[in-house]
Image (cartoon, rainbow, N blue to C red):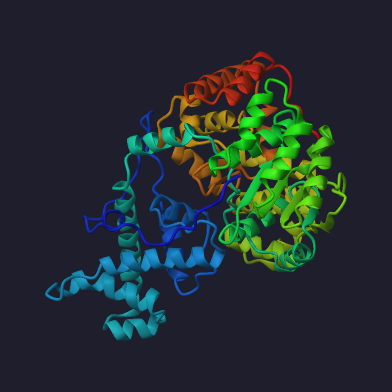
Length: 540
């Protein structure tokens, strides 16, 4: 849980100069430890798409643009999709303006800038632009291709000059050393569902407790994360993700709450909690928590609340809390319509409509095929997670393979397994090694933690995570953490690890967390290393 800080799109002057360098453009391929060259970022086809949509900031956003804004420090935290698009457009226009040569330059040097301005910034059509520039339409096509390559090279030069891996490691070490709540998830390429958003906002205006429920993968967390990212500009939002066997007790919840209040200058609850260790008296600590929150307006979100049935005391505490403190809003998010807080207003998360499925396929994969969208919608049942996983599959599989998959499978669990098998099959052993390491974490993982588990550099890990984001298997968070887009994906990978592999990865994770002073996580992974033959305990 944290209160997010909204960042503007402007960089400090020194960093802004680095991020749009006038250095000679050159393609960037980050070297990897095994002698391979990482794929160039951003890809040329992606840069061409961005420039084509320069006048439509609501459509320009994709996972690569979010990654580019993050790497250059331009990603507006907690912003809407439109604001992210505007930040991306501003960066691209700035790069184009950097291509503006001196007035004394020759015609050839001026041409790329003139083409970029006419075709993309001003949106002049092909034939008109050719006439305006005094060249043929055929030559214009060649000049556009050359100009797009120069924009790509300029962006790659900028990324190559940003903070070194050593600076990133030092910053991450500092971040690991201090306590923080799990951040609000960042959902890349989120497609708003305006009808459900309106229903949920209306419910929160009329009730201080709301329960959002629906089957796994339908988009509950994505919707709440998008709303919460907007709420933080006006009030604190505390995000608590319940995990079976990890933090699904009232004692764990109170401990997390106490540490959060300590970080915002209210240490009393943490002091009472520490005094009651090793066995927390939740009845006493709970009363203190209510008192400490008496003047703490904001929103408390409990994700995967169906796992709270492990300790009914969580529900009783929240019922007491919301009765005594009506100014505090609580949103529970779970797969079932029960357990339900006594004063909660239920809001059911419905499957995607056909139009929403078509929109997701267009945003994630550029698929504009009404027939294929209808088939995919029926195949996935409108489950948002399955549609997102289907998008990269539809762009890589042959027509025969797509037809076979759509016809052969109908159960949603089978569809997910099929898509994950396909997408992980696209990865080489190098990427799968990192993917397996990521599956042992039950919280969002950092590049530094993955590097420690796999003996890779931060640059190598960043390359692999970028590919995981592109396949919509993982997403990059607002605080630079990475997480699987849904817990079921992490479980799918983890359950296919051998006992020996689980033991090795948990042992390395325990050593990593111990080195960084996080004894709770170190203890969890040490315990898992000793019981690696057993699957992780999960509840439906």
